[in-house]
Length: 236
Image (tube, rainbow, N blue to C red; front, side, top):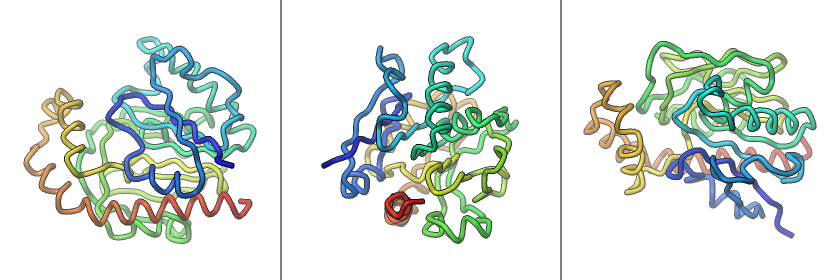
């Protein structure tokens, strides 16, 4: 019987991307809920077999402007307290960090583009090993302090905190291994046009890097998420 993977999505083009196929192959029935939906954070947060919280161009601390963030943080916190499998990407990682009591704050820079990660010993020993030496997509202006008891997994040349885990069931990735760099990547460029312009990002370079690194990143990211899902099955 298929298990449900509940996916909280903040902007429509930032979807599961390359993670979708490995999730289905592992027997998950994917169900999206979008920010603004009446049922976005409705129901028991512990019911789904897996919760995935995706990225978006807002800050964890902007709850006055986006009140749904308060309910979303509470939803995530309840799930984490129960030790239920949870994966966060970019904003999702920051929401997990905040739900665990860490601080999320502006880093002072816009880290947008492809660059390699530096893995810690824990990162090299876990699913992120599949990303070693490969440029991944970074797209954020905020970062977080490492939550208490969490394992630091990766950093970049610009930002120290790029990934952490809490046991085998909680994984937070501030970068975007899931991004599809085929024609769908253009949706990211259009959807984030104002941010890219303000940050002075060269779209030609970003497109070229996406084409150059995309195939390797796709293979590595699918291997990474499959390895993490295998860890859930082994009773971590």
